[in-house]
Length: 347
Image (tube, rainbow, N blue to C red; front, side, top):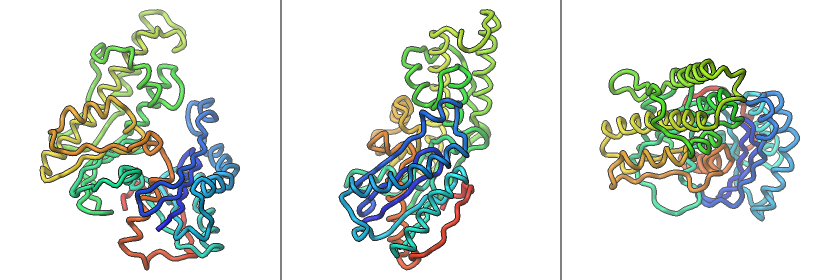
């Protein structure tokens, strides 16, 4: 079964063709990073206008890369939400029109479940249930127990800033640019992760929820203290060594909290066969190292096989859609009017 999927939840215009939920025939992404770097973050109206400009060219490129015509496509999939509503509208309306004109079944996909299914892409290895998933992105973090396909039990989630959002804000505080995740990770390579003792919010005993707002504020306070001591005018005058040490200390604090929370979940559900990390921050090498260090060797640790599967992409939406369709093929029909949503409810 070949599914053409579309993803426009934020600032990537993405299309993919996925075969049987695993094989990636094409995964085309038009990024807007250079545009939003100028403002230090995504401006929704700007992102939506770029989607309008890029949507048709990306679709055409995707079909060409997959060596498919519309006759080869069995169904469509679209990110329904959560995300920027103006960006989601461009994707959903495009999918609605194609579904109507081409008479293809249309499968709406929740964005976070797309990230979860990024670990099914590009390989044939059997994935064993039950499994734990840590989703780590800019908008939200979750720890999820999966006992079967699309059987999600949310064990923990963000109470305030998500990890990816905290990376972006700390990068802005340090004057490093946007997006924050890759920049912080790169700068941290030259830093001492023990240079600054930053808070790790574990919340109530046994809690699997996340809170990174206090950590972000602690970094801001350290930067202000350093600036005051040195008599600096703004972040452009901050010493590179200080930036590296703060970045390394911040990254370590975030990743240790993520790993500790995931371990709490595993200790509660020892029958788990695999532990998955997904979402944009799953590309962070140090996070993968720390999680690997804390888990027993007999637990399979799985991360997306390519960096392009970690960040927002349409291939993951196609993978999630395939397993949704297999559960109830008769549910998804052509000419279905999908409306976008900003809800974070997993489903």
